[in-house]
Length: 386
Image (cartoon, rainbow, N blue to C red; front, side):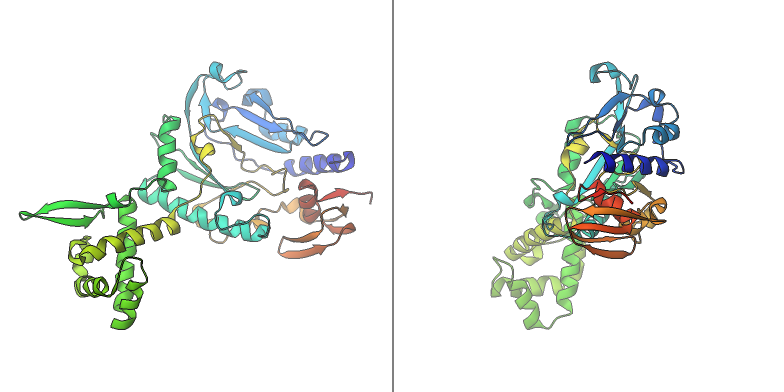
């Protein structure tokens, strides 16, 4: 990034912070703070091991320094400004999850548009929140648009702060269904002197698979017999005989399905349950970034700050805002929508921002400032004289 572009962005970020209202985390004085300034050259410099007292008033600091990125620690410490982790005196840490389009299995960052990546990430966010709130019962959950290509989720329920990295990894493995014991979702239970195989229905991935089984059987009941058999026989390991048995057992005995009783379905029931479990995992897991969650000293972006790689606002979202939230509109700083700016585009292409779309060839253009800031922060353009 050349000097003119860097100085322009520093000035405009400072202007943004003059009217910004950053959202400080709980116990802000017990957290480590860090930031990345606008440095020359391609390398970046992380300034960290600071307490909030080193910064002074956070709002004044942001106006004065106009940093490229701003972070606080998920952890709380006795002495957050100490120069080494060993000297800080770890007290505990929030449970933090990071969703980034780069980690979504269905997204190719080389071909997907920015809007497509963000939409896919929001779908993953919904799945993550469902897992955290339904399966773990977490209540104190904060959602933040990262300002880049995804979302952060902070959990501050009582009891999570003391979890070590190993315990946090177990939560990650559950959310991502890593090494899920599919066979273990079905248990053998003694009933009236006999044994019966039942799908675990009270919680976890067993309950989620059971819910999918119920929906699947409801769908079968809406089909004629030939179509229902064809649907069953689409699964590997289920032939015509097993399909007949399953139809007779499940479609004609829905109470058994509601109880999770798969014994009545014969050998084909196990095959069906395992297949539906795999479908459940594929549809309901969330591809979170493991190192973020397991790192008990992690620095995470400050809500209300600007992302130095997009110029978008790191936005905290209420639970009822998520569905309607459009980051390419709602995270655009209002201050960057009031004027145009002249830039030289070095990486041409289409930019969708603030409710409009711009296809820009290489060369000089006058564009809305939010578009110019977006391209400059991503090293796709540079500032030229007006």
